[in-house]
Length: 636
Image 1 (tube, rainbow, N blue to C red):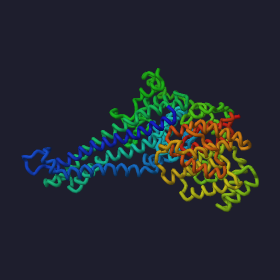
Image 2: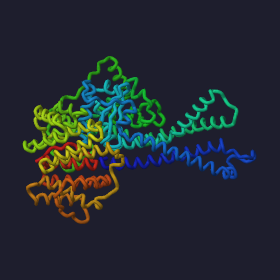
Image 3: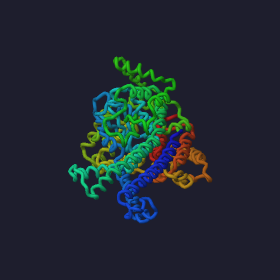
Image 4: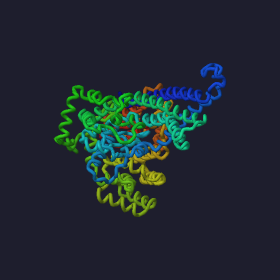
């Protein structure tokens, strides 16, 4: 199953989730209406039965009012909970007790965690998510939360860091990245909102009982009003258990298949089944397992491991079943051997060997790139690890700092031409101050100009720190990025990439863009915009040869199999035209995005080579329409 099919499957799961929610609401409304009828709808004539047609007709107003009221309360509660989670993954992680990973931590286990997350994000071609640690939790568990990759957060327990080696930790993190890439995070947060709406009546029942006890001083009362209130509280609490039943049923129906898919994806990403299998075995062996001290009723479906002992409506397949799906020859007796080895202290940390910085990239093919979207394989992970190992540590530290990340972005935009760079430094001083200019100059003196292959990884590593800056500071940063990019009166693909990625990422965080990242539009309805994107790729791949550029453009248009060939558009004012086109193409359906990406790749590889500028522009365009492309090396 490829990236685009997984996106379609997630959308189908969302529709299934809404249907289950409506059925649960209908059942709870029916039960609550019957409770209201029992308490407040007794017939005035004792000879008339409660459920007779005459009494029901007499109580029509009461029943309709109660049914509509209950349904409205549930829907409003669901909307309220969903709105409270608009802060994205970081909001969920903080509610769950997570602490944001300190950018300058010296804890080797925390640094290892950050390195693993950054390597997998780089291999996946998406922004590095925020990282949270649940310091008080000894169980082995983790989660990914958020609406989009831009506001994603990964949470990991201290038990995971202490008990797993690097390969096992990598398997767990790869599992969570599968949830990010597959769109499961958005589904999980929607599930939290809907489940809260289902459980709200139990909360109301608890409040009624608590209030009755408080105002009654714990003493029983003989008047009918107090008895009715008490009966209503008990009844709502009982109906709340119906809500709890439906909530767990819905979570189990939606989550179990997604967890199995994430396990399989983690193996596919790392090409090392022993990593995630080892983590699952340790959950089975350690007494804490995956259990957590915090109340996990609301979030159990998004955790790596089952955090409760409940077997009915479990949100995860049984551990032995999960392990056997990864290692078919596994026998439960192996857990006893593992437990004994852990108890004797004989298990050693099996750190992955240092990746060779000289690792060579395999030649890319158009189909290979298309197949790699939304996937993390051993080759891309190896390349990402090698690239991450080459990044200067002081620059990575700067990327992690809230105060230093903006300086790093300015440094990445500096032009190799000394005259242009001088104008850029003057602009930094005019826009900000001399101190900022001096700090950027210090980076140049210490590290020289940024290597082209280091710029995008450093940009992606800096995004979580940038998100923690005030909104106005981010808008100011976008403005100075624009000024520096235009200092030489031309926009390079990397300058476009940086500005576009930064603008799109910050737009999602500042404006809370929580909608689905795919729509229902077709390429036939976006012909002009498609032509603009193909022209930009063809132009930058063949700047000195107009006929070759037109041939590359024609190949890309032909790959789309449109009814009539698209015309060769002008490349004048390409940045604003391309930005507007990409904004429209975000609304394409997943299958249409697949066709578009294939046409882009065909355009780039028309001459059997790929320049760095072409690949930077291809990644920028893909990221803008929310399709992550892994790191690519220039070919030819």
